[in-house]
Each structure stands twice: as structure tokens, then as C-alpha cells.
Length: 244
Image 1: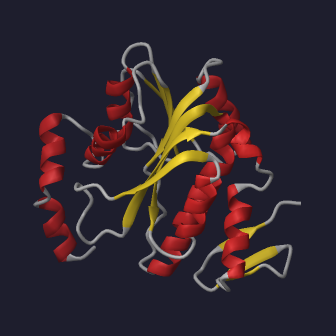
Image 2: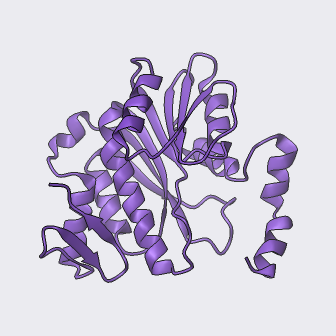
């Protein structure tokens, strides 16, 4: 960790504001900005928060859904208990965690999926960006089938190869897809948020997964080589192993 980053982190006005207003993370204000502009979360909604720790987005979601809503968060790390939210520790790619997530909603349909998910930063942007795209496609392929038609999906992703393909794939599934850069994002950050509204019934009749659509697009652009069915190796560090 550099001295410059530590100094900027300590003097960050959004971090101070989060402390003053009782939010667990500065990222809470990013979701508040998204809500103010696009209103994806409604009173009484059932919300799934993937990558929820330490709980800043879940706090905002709980405020927005009110007493009749429900917020379920999933993360590899422990998230401290919170009134109005139920947290699950584990990997959303794990079937056991997926089943536990479905059960936590007690039969309610999911109205909104939110995710401030981020890869473990390696320091190599090409790899980090590729993993970011990979994480979001995994999230889409698991969670969108759980989302109620007309529902909303919000996620963070790093800008770079695969982003345009991801946006195209989401536009086939949602009536509206917006790219949004919150004021509360750090100036040097390459993150962007995709705000998707009104999930089409049956995902518009699409057969391919979001992940497969993106891989096909990357292959056409020469970014990945998918000539081998067992493994796809990307020039940017994108690596996906196909299931049998």
C-alpha cells in the first residue's frame, strides 16, 4: 500500500461522510446516487446483494425497501448483523450457497439484484479488468434467472475489453441499460456501474448465457481464442474453464 493511497484514503471526504452518517462504507453513497437518478429499488422490494461485505449497500437497500421488504446479502467474508438484512457467508458460485440464497427469500420473487463486487486487486490492470468482467458474467448467469420480470440489476465493472459485449448482452435482456459513474467514485478509479431496468420476460427468448455471448464477442474481436473447447485463454488474462 503506497503512502499516497493511504493519505488520500484518510482525507477522503466520502469516507468521513460515511462515518458521520453511520454507513459501513463510502460505497453506500454510490448506491444512493444510483437510486436518486434511476430509482431501481422500491418500497417493499426483495433485494439480493452479491459481494455485500462490509454492508454499505445492504444498509442503503434496507432503508429503501422498508419493513415490508427483504435484503439478502452474500459474500465470502463475514458481514456484521444488520436489522432488516440476512447475510450468507460463501461463494455464490457454490450450489449449496445458491440453494441457501433461494431459501432465504422464503418464496418471494427477487425484484432487484445489486452488486458492488470487485476482484482481489493484483496490481495488473489487464488481469483485474478481465476478472471483473468474469465475475459479473458469473453473477448474471446465476442470478438473472431468479430475477422477477420487470426487475432491476445493478453491478460494478471495470472498464476495458468485454465491457461493450457485456452491455450488449444486458440490453438483450433488459429494456433499459445505463452506464453510470457516481460522483462518489474515486477520481482515479476505472470502475463504472451498469444500471439495468425492466428485465424482459423469459430474457427475451435468448438461449445463450451472458458468459457465452461475451466469449463469442471477445473471440470475434481477437481478444480470446476459443478454438479449444476445454479452455479459453485470453490475451488480457481472461480465463474460463467450460463445464462438461
